Amino acid sequence: MAKKIYEVDNPRIAILSVGSEEGKGNNLVKETSKLLSNTDLNFTGNIEPNEIPFSKADVILCDGFVGNVVLKLTEGLGDAVVELIKKELGDNNQSRDLQNSIFEKMNTLAAFGGGPLLGVNGLAIVGHGSSNAIGITNAVETAKFVIQTNLIESQKEELTKIRKQINR
Image (tube, rainbow, N blue to C red; front, side, top):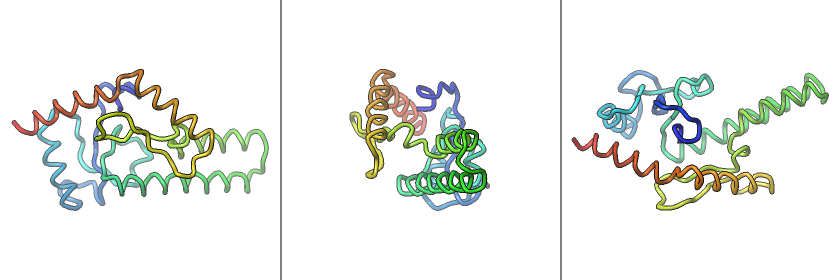
């Protein structure tokens, strides 16, 4: 996705963990780190949650439960910051521009309407159950983009290449 959507040629890949040091994390994190270290991927190791906003990695890996928790926390923090700006600066044009900018950066799921579910043999866009009409429209646009960029086939090819490297 980083290559196709964001046009990052050699994305920095990290695993979300409780510490950035090698060997930190649960068994899944440790085993995945070993596997990724044996590939040609630009694997940079572990990343802590507090490092996410500072773009220390282009791709951050974690299991689906943890990823969903991080997304919802980020969205909630974004909403809280927007409300704080409204309260402190008032509801004027300059304040609204700042609010919108923060919302877009903190709530990427709303901007895209959802994201493609990896590991499905086909196209599935996962969005919020509370999505409004704009969110659903954005999800349809995201699905259209995924098809136009041939993202799913590209992901399959990339995974095949990575699996071959791991099984050497």
